[in-house]
Image (spheres, rainbow, N blue to C red):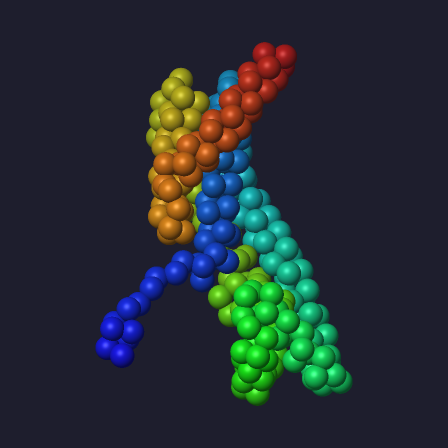
Length: 233
């Protein structure tokens, strides 16, 4: 018994809701703001115009991320709520069929029929809705949708990500501003990839390379467009 009590496992699936929103928000903050700054700078704009554009991108992006994440996760939450309501009604009107359905789930996972029936009986006696939510619908406390948490995480991390290239743009020499912002942003993205991977228990360097590649591509495209527009104007 003592060995069982001392054996503790650290699973990271509980972090998936806020971690996804946080990584997405910070990554988007860095990439979108840095890309806009590099594009405007490539069009031969002055520092004030560059900082105004970057600041506008920060505010608009943070609000957009918060609203988009809230609406998206709220839709998931609404679906979960509707499924739970349907399951609650089915448990009320036909508990026997629901018991057989739950036992069938366990048998499909390799549990013997007699044992599966006993497990279904015991779990339904304790909390039938929770048992069906977890094993039939895949809804649990760790993975359930949390719209407000996701929205706040996205807005806060987008702001944190967007501030980084904006600060570099404020202090870098104007002639070197596009290069300075690009290099600094790629470093920020690599660090973000490593942090996000470590928080989720994944391989850090693969995540770092992934976000750095897409960030570099976005900044290269906007720099090219900015240069073309600036030359044309």
